[in-house]
Each structure stands twice: as structure tokens, then as C-alpha cells.
Image 1: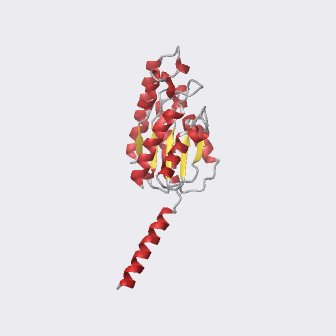
Image 2: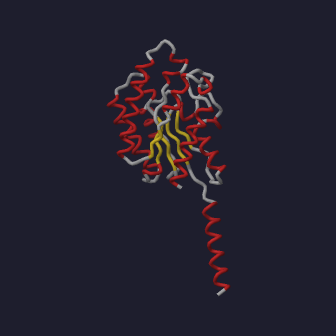
Image 3: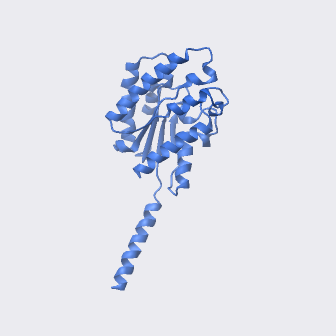
Length: 220
């Protein structure tokens, strides 16, 4: 009997050890807000998220980031059509749309292309919608870069785009994180803005990363 108990305990501990050695794969899709324009690579939100999870003793590969400053939804789509990704990924984040708004592109076009991108993101997650996290679009209208522009109109358009990506996210039952209120605090706190006067600082990305980490921990 004692020998049987020892065998069972051994199997339990070895199983637990095996589980702890799994290394998770994370794909981040987006634009300048995903690569972390004007902050060190280690301080963008995908890398800060992975670092937080590693501190929690969860093994994560370095995030795979498909993003570029200035990309619109269709430009991200084009890049993905030319990129072979070694999936599936355990987690996928998607944050895209600010450049559609900046260029004055239509909300209907954004809705169509965002939905297509979200479908791709779910595919990259092995079809697991609950392993996909969408982040809302930041409000750049509160930054020094927007000085002299119609900030109320920018905020109105950002809110419209976010209402679209939130609605579609709920439709597909993916996780949704509204980080826009964080970015609007930059109106009174310039430490939340990077040195370029437009993008978020590492300090603000840290708050996004904490929210993403919390969602990933719930999934795990």
C-alpha cells in the first residue's frame, strides 16, 4: 500500500513539473502602439506582459510581434498575407485602427477589415476565441502632437472606432480591454507620453501590460 502511494505521489509531482515546463507562445498584432514607438523594445506592452508572466513563474517565449508604425487595418492584413507564422499561439493580442481614424478612413471599412483581422487572430490562436485579447484604440488627441487640432473631434472618432471593435469583439467572444481611459490621463500627466510627444510612455504601457497579464492569468 505504501509503495502504491509513493508511485501515485511521484506521478502527481512529475505531472506538475511537466506542466510548469510548458513555454507559452504569444503573438501581438497591431501598429505603433504594439511595437512601442519611442520606447525601448523591452518596454512595449507585449514584452512587459511577458516579463510580468515570467515573474509569476509562467514560462513565455519572446513575443512574436507583427506591427509597424503607421499601419492601417488593410496594411496589417497585407503583411499577414505575406508572413508565415509558426502557430498556433497560446495567446494573440490585436490593437489596430488609429491610423484608419487619422487618415479619415470610413468606419464601415474599419468594421469590415477589423472583423477579418479578428477572424485571423482567432485562427492564429488555434481557433480558441477565448485566447484572443483585443485592446481599444488610444486617444492621441490629448498628446502634445495634437496641439492645434480639434481634440473633441478626435475623441469622438476614436470612441466610434472603439464602439466598433468592442461590438465585434463581443460578437466573437474574445477578451476586450479598454485602455483608452488610461491614455486620456495624459492630458494632465505628461509622464504618460513618450519623448516623441505622441505615443504612450513605458509607464503607460506598464498599465496595459498589467491588464493583459490579468486576462492571460484568468485564461490559464
